[in-house]
Image 1 (cartoon, rainbow, N blue to C red):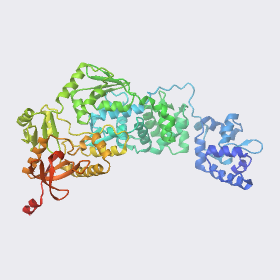
Image 2 (tube, rainbow, N blue to C red):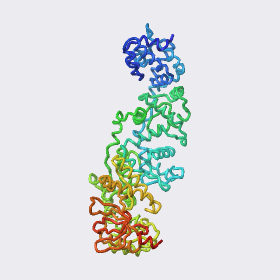
Image 3 (cartoon, helix red, strand yellow):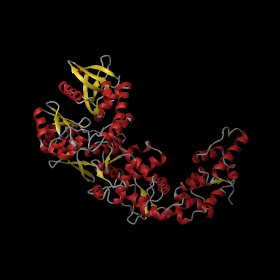
Image 4 (cartoon, one colour):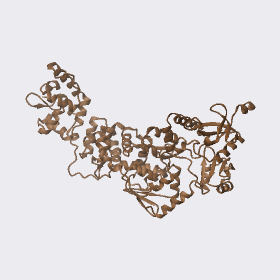
Length: 636
């Protein structure tokens, strides 16, 4: 006959009570060991927690199936468990001494009646053969999506890839075989902020990915898989997915029979058994988180699935550190004369993503195949990859590059920067006077209505897109927009990268972005005044935030200032005042140049001032009418 917890606990020694409290994580009253009253308080506290229905159900659910079967047989048949299992069950407070032997508390016996023998016997037979799972497949599948999104893919209004781009994600990709898997992983990455959307296209947001350790993407994507609403993919509710992974982790190393195991879980939680078995478990198998037999009648956690579940459910990052070591190194790259690059896919994903910036990912299997072309290298330069960084990313100097690849990079080195486009100022700067004259006369560039400012500087007076027209005409203008590539996990620099992304626009800087420009300009000035070291770091990391800060030839500076004065336009100076140790951004309306000084109305000090030309380190022409008190009174 079963007895209540209080009566049975009174037969336990102090050491046994302490073991039960530690194993079941029960609170222990202060000074419980000071006399009979203290022990009585301890027993009452233990009874309150041990008889709690939720805690009791969890304790039973956490047991291995053999322990549950042994416990149930002890209640129904009186057959005591083996000594080792008996000690384990006693330590959990599920079997207690009654003064003469051992018994099961009545509340535990009542809870066991909810389980029948079929639900408890869910261990697979020893002859069950599971299909091997590809190691790290979930991580590699996520990386494959990021690699294919690096150059950008078109998306529908709903945010999912268009049919053609979906086929691109799946094409020659051994990590993804089904459309629903591709769209699900794409959505998880997008919700994590690792994909950047603009104008109907999605690109991999490299600053966000590279600012975290290589394992982070898979860890957070796995957490989103268990937490987010995924009704569009027919997934069971998030609490069902979480509950299943929790119990799979508790039975790590065991091969389980799926049907009785789900029947057992359904008795503890209102599980959507049909969708769990038909949709979620097959997805986990395709992602290499579990492996099953041919009929999916038996399953077991893989090493990869166990590591991710342990990190998410137990918050144990240190215990799984060894699992992620294969994602740390950068493995050799093999360039081919056909401009193909071969490298193992199981390596540091950051290296693969940086490679995808300069080459298209063609085939993703055990080895990744990337193809370099003139177009991919130009795309990389426009996204901010320095020209001198291209050989290093392609394996030099440790790996000799084939001659076609060397010639391609040398040709780019000669041609990139023939023309520089200043998008915000609508100016073109040519490498020499002969090229500037050619630009002015080329019929393909007539929509720009180019006007000469100096021998090498032209003003764009038309409405055409200078960058696009120059590329169509066969020129390779110096890139006009940049993205930060490496942020070293520094949050402040990451925020500046986000500010840089706000400037990106396919048609270049335009008046719609002027409010954002003004905000960033003000923030840069404050940073310049408060933390010069960080200001210099931001300028080095994110060149596109250089608002007029580049050194210019004295002749060109003077020509632009004369042009602004003659057409009553405003300029922005990068100016070093005589008594200052760092430059300032000044908005002025030029009036005239006298000898070595610029006479202009300063909008900061609201007065006419003289600026020494040798202290002007840069000038930016603004498409705004100049303003002085005299001009204002005449207008009035």
